[in-house]
Image 1 (spheres, rainbow over the protein chains, first blue to last red):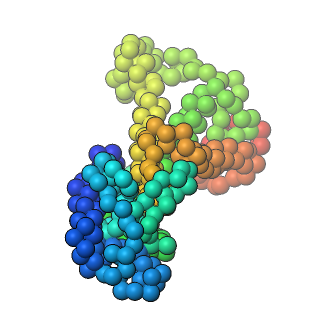
Image 2: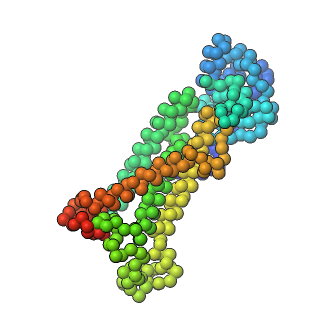
Image 3: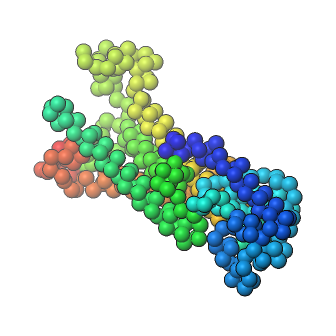
Length: 122
Length: 224
């Protein structure tokens, strides 16, 4: 328990990884590399995108109106969940066996309700 | 060796029971966590990651803090508060800190009394309250641990729900923290209170926690 408490209190040490994953996702979108962007999506988010658009993910993700993120502002990680707040939007990530993946992107706040996201897992 | 085991069997048995149930809790909690993750279509984690997680820490610490609070409150209250007929209470004319003679302090200490009971100075005052002080320290430390781990777990849930995390000071005022705290406190106080009353009328032969089987219901502070 003291080890878990120390990790909790001092941060999980995954902030850099979470920020890098979000940045890579937006870089892939900016480069129009749909395959690279889809590889960084959480399985449920990818599945939801393909079902709702009726197209393969690499094509569908480029057609979603995910705004350009801008510079990263804050990164918060709690357990298996992370959040990166950019200038113009917020991204939510989850920790999966294959690494951190984007669960929701292009999110805008609507307190006290959950963020409204262009891409999300459901 | 056999004598050591017999003379320390209470602590050894409870130590083993504690370790066994802690390991069992870790395994069941890990499976439960991953089951919930699958339900939320999120990633699962390994056993080591679970037992070093805030989820495990809050489940352990919220129970520890309430147990030590229970002992602390019971320990201190029973100095002054009485229950006629209960073996958990002092005799009805003995409320309070009692005399130095009753408590074997200073000049009334026995030859084999602890050294700090004999000194009759600040060391005796400290030693006279050492049990409550340690219980209070463990309670406060585990309650602090619960607040930090519970804050992390609650924020993990908020992020799953696509909501912003909250600060630790806000969490201390949040229903999640107080629901976790009070659900544990109510059961602890119920257990102690009901035991103190039930033991007035019911018996467990041979247990020091019970009155002798043939003791009268009105006998107070008597142990079997």
